[in-house]
Amino acid sequence: MMYELTGFSIFVVALVVLAVIIVIMGVKVVAQGSVYTVERFGRYTRSLQPGLHVIVPVMDRIGSKVNMMETVLDVPSQEVITKDNAVVRVDGVVFYQVLDAASASYEVRNLERAILNLTMTNIRTVMGSMDLDQLLSQRDSINARLLNVVDDATEPWGVKVTRIEIKDITPPTDLVEAMARQMKAERDKRANILDAEGLRQAEILKAEGDKRSQVLAAEGRKDAAFLDAEARERTAEAEAKATSMVSEAVASGDLNALNYFIAQQYVEALGKFAQSDNQKTLFLPVEASNVIGAIGGIAEIARDAQKLRESKRPSGPWSGDQSSS
Image 1 (cartoon, rainbow, N blue to C red):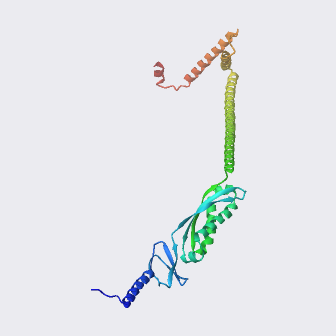
Image 2 (cartoon, rainbow, N blue to C red):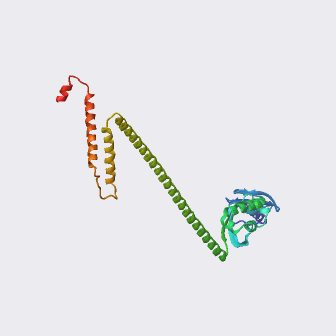
């Protein structure tokens, strides 16, 4: 069975197809990590977050598709003149993230180019105010200063600059060679200073050791002299006491004590003379009978002392037994 298409049928079909096309045009799917801006007759009205959305066809259209994820930009290499007139080549990277899709779309034209030019300009400004030594040793400080300046400048654009990192700082070849020679000279200087300090410390310790040894030796001599003086003092006291006792014995009429004293001194003098290292021959005096008489006096003193002890023993019934035994 065949149907004949009339003009009205064609109109209906065209109307249905147009309605389907309008519905398809009004349905928008926003991917994760992106935000779409909607314009009605060329004016921004709203932003579409990730998901399914419906707009009014013909009246509304998608203005910009903005990537909301963090993005990395390579900063091209450029020459920078430092404060001390050294020319270096510098490059880096910039990390940023769009926070406001509308501002990023309508506040600035060509966002990435604007961020790159702003970063390169501030690199020349910040690094141009520093010496070469500071550039090579204070990268963290340079990165922090650049981040503060660029982040403040891009805030009206709805952009958050999260990090700025300087990758390479390349001085000229002749300057690198001069820096290497300077570094070697500094290291040699520090090595010489350390050697001199070591020698100085060794000399100080040696002098202190010599001083301490001399002090200890002096203290030893002082103690020895004190002990010698004390010994001589005691010897003198003993001799004085012996002389006093001999004098008392002579006064009481006992000449044997005097003979003992003279014999003792005589024998000690002969012993010292015989022990002398330089003396090889010993001549006895002609009056040898005097020495024998003195020794006899010693024997008499010993007998008198024995008699005195026996006379002082207590007498009793056991004394006879003890003597007989």
